Amino acid sequence: MSFPNWERVVIKVGSALIAPNKQGCSSHYLLSIAQFIVRCRANGTQVVLVSSGSVAAGAHLFDEEEKTNIAVKKAMAAAGQTEMMSTWDRLFDFPSAQILLTHADLRDRERYVSVRETIDTLLDHEILPIINENDTVTTDKLKVGDNDNLSAMVASAAEADALIICSDIDGLYNKNPHEHDDAEMLKEVNSIDESIYAMAGGAAADGVGTGGMRTKIEAAEKAISHGIDTYIINGFTELSFNMLLDGKNPGTHFQPYDKPMQENVHWMRHTSNAQGEVIVESDFAASLENDAEQLTSSEIIGVRGEFSVGDTILVRKDDGTKLVKAKSNYSSCLLNFIAKQDSEEFATEFEEKTGPIISEQHIANLEKE
Ligand SMILES: Nc1ncnc2c1ncn2[C@@H]1O[C@H](COP(=O)(O)OP(=O)(O)O)[C@@H](O)[C@H]1O
Ligand SMILES: N[C@@H](CCC(=O)OP(=O)(O)O)C(=O)O
Image 1 (cartoon, rainbow, N blue to C red):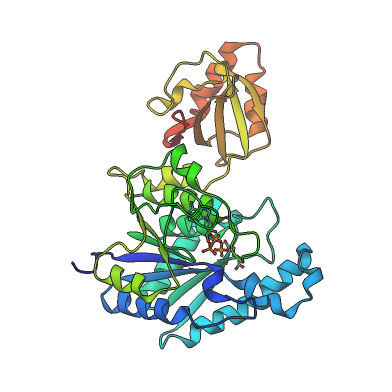
Image 2: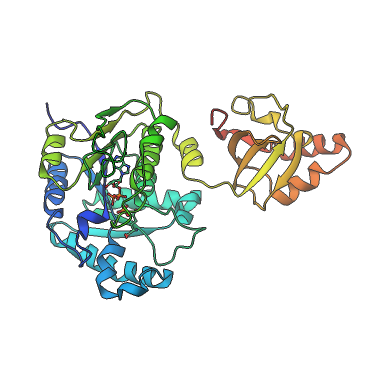
């Protein structure tokens, strides 16, 4: 077998590979990853690196007892980030570039497109983008929270062919192998459902990782629905990378969808956050995916939250069933106003002039959830 015909890959590297002993960065495990990146580039495959490890790398600069403090964690990330970047940079004889992102940068369509353009431009100039979450500025509302999901969002934004998640374990097991001796590894996952999520536990309490397998499966789900081949592999061993270069699967492979979601629909479904909700009657029967214009103000029984024109909203039934996420052509203020009008004629006329509340080309269907 030979190296897959990937034009672009995203490689995600977990904290344990960068700062294994919580004593600053070590290049011990990074050498074989760096070598893999060099070989990919030599094969004509563009590489984007999503690297964790800033918190773990900066940890040794702070006292043990203060490490649970949020401000100190952010300081650890700020200090560790420079060390992590310089460790990677020393391993390459080509330039690298640092991109620090929060969820706020990705759920805003303009900023998302801007991130994508920057990644494209760096790759066109043979510069290696190295991406991490901007932990220093994030709050609960702004953050992605783990680099597994971040790497899937980046892989989608970059239109990558493959996402390779390098971890401290061989792949996904049917139960946490650190807790169950009889755990068995899955080589191939053809679809992700609740039974797959049920296998996944969190990160080890005494480890440096965040999210464990659950966030890796979330990432895989995001990536495969965009048609991206996804692997969870053991980044400690060079064999994993040699196998990938030979076109073999060294860990768990997640089969991408045959019919991937369109890029803007995928962004709405998996990256964008709903800024507000529009509630319709429980017996609302129209399929908004096929006919978005069925959502008129006369169907709306409630508007929740504040949103502006162009923001993503969630349309759900009164009984809680989620229908679609969609781009709103109206602000919450205006929708509230027309939904409260007694005269249906007024509302119909208004919408005829102003256009539909949501449009078909900006909808992600959630009915199967
Ligand atoms: N079903 C499972 N299969 C494999 N690992 C699991 C499973 N459930 C929980 N884990 C834990 O997830 C860890 C990997 O995730 P994490 O610590 O977040 O690493 P990383 O830093 O690579 O993101 C494993 O070391 C293991 O402790
Ligand atoms: N942004 C954080 C990493 C968060 C994270 O997801 O860590 P990991 O589970 O090791 O990939 C950092 O740089 O420390």
